[in-house]
Image 1: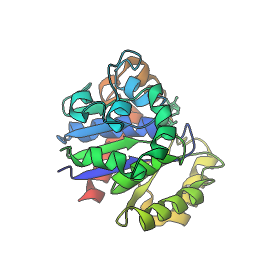
Image 2: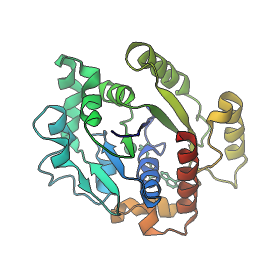
Image 3: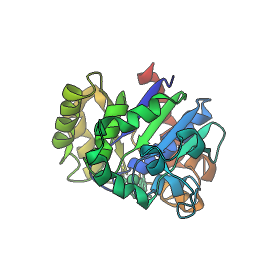
Image 4: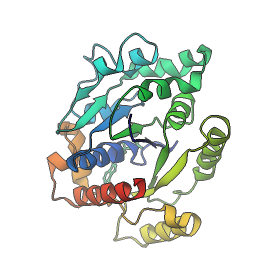
Length: 253
Ligand SMILES: Nc1ncnc2c1ncn2[C@@H]1O[C@H](COP(=O)(O)OP(=O)(O)O)[C@@H](O)[C@H]1O
Ligand SMILES: [Mg+2]
């Protein structure tokens, strides 16, 4: 049985979900955990960021969701020891519509992941609160929310929390918010510090002590199909995600 399933979710695009999923997973794997990353975004950025060509895939998460393939046949080991990927590509966009008419449509991903055995599964969600994200919240025990350090950072969070509340009531009573992680933090601006204070004020201990700095090495790593642990393990971005991995492990146990 898999020990922990974490959905990485924020319905805003470009806040650092994929960057966080890939690099947190990498450092958890470096700490000797068997980690599976599930790419639940039709954009497939997690898939390509982990060095898998999303155009040439025989089968993907989409096929698994509709019982046309076995998860164990689609999952592959990537980049570093102990890091596995359930890939996706643009085909997955159809699932958002096709799932609507499926029985227990919110539980499909849960049923797939239940049969797997990893220490930790991270689900990289699409930038929406549609059926795919609801599947992630139903399958997961924990939600990790990346928050971009920007003026409108907190906008949208109340809607996200209300959806999490609804899923808790209807589908997954033990769903827990693991925490909020500030991304693209720029220590040279007072805005970054203001956003951090605002987040701390609203969410207190839920906010991770680690902040992820804006770091060009993090942005360029996916173009090499590498995690930051492989691309530049001494960069500020790498050290931050390593620290986050430690904090996450502490919160999980
Ligand atoms: N800490 C960071 N420093 C610099 N660039 C970042 C950082 N985090 C993310 N990015 C870049 O910002 C863009 C959006 O990040 P991404 O992780 O894809 O967000 P999401 O998955 O929420 O859409 C990407 O181009 C990514 O490389
Ligand atoms: Mg993404």
